[in-house]
Length: 332
Ligand SMILES: C[S@@+](CC[C@H](N)C(=O)[O-])C[C@H]1O[C@@H](n2cnc3c(N)ncnc32)[C@H](O)[C@@H]1O
Image (cartoon, rainbow, N blue to C red; front, side, top):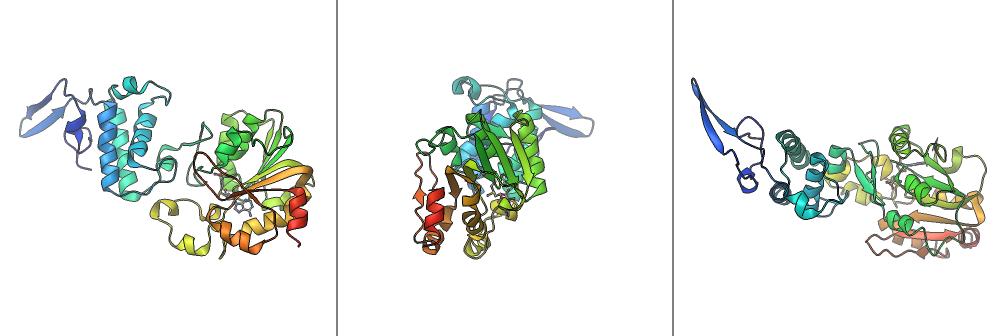
């Protein structure tokens, strides 16, 4: 990135900076150094400037935001340490200090040139109103499960769940949010990836849930002791081969273990459906995301009484089925 002056600055610098001290030319014996006072670079014009660069670069979104302006605002707020609940007018008028400005520039550059999702660059993702540590070992949280959890699965749970299982926990976001909204529940969170569980452990510690939330390395149900859960939640890998082949660069930064699920996208879901009944309480429910693999699932299990959930804030491809439905619907 070209730098004007001693500190790297954005190309659109002039638009966002009130040069309180002004730009001054200082003569060093044989060269001229442009010294720019960055103290008065304001949040709002900086966001607008980065958003313009993101739009021009035609980035792909879907890892926490869906447009360049929100993505730029997330970057600036995170690095400048601005709380999301701050009054926008007051926050936008704040000055960004030179050190934060340099870091914002570095990350914006990586976002544009390497197409790294911003969540990985910032080491943070937001899910169900909570902040999670993430890195390249886990999928970036974005599941519509967040809305179900915030609504406490109303009206689908017959009673407050006491035993909950999250299959394919990744960063632990679903398990942790569930443990928080159901404070009397014990939660087991399973992943086959030891790397993912290491990330989940950071988040479990951050939310101080170690007493009630157990991380388990297991291939789906295979490593679990026999027990009955009131709620089994899963956002397993469900991307079919054809969609895997057309993933954009941003999505290729994520672990394929969190995405790829065979030719039809159902390699994990088939196994979950086969075994879930043995791990559900009599009135327990399985809630599972299959995204774009919904048509393949419905074609494969035409008699299964899947209830397809609807979302106010976007998202689709999440079904619910109870134990009786699993027992009857998968065999007929
Ligand atoms: C789509 S990601 C979901 C992560 C997290 N629950 C979320 O919503 O952001 C699927 C997760 O399932 C894990 N996974 C893949 N195959 C698995 C298996 N056979 N058993 C357990 N976990 C598995 C992956 O490692 C990944 O963390």
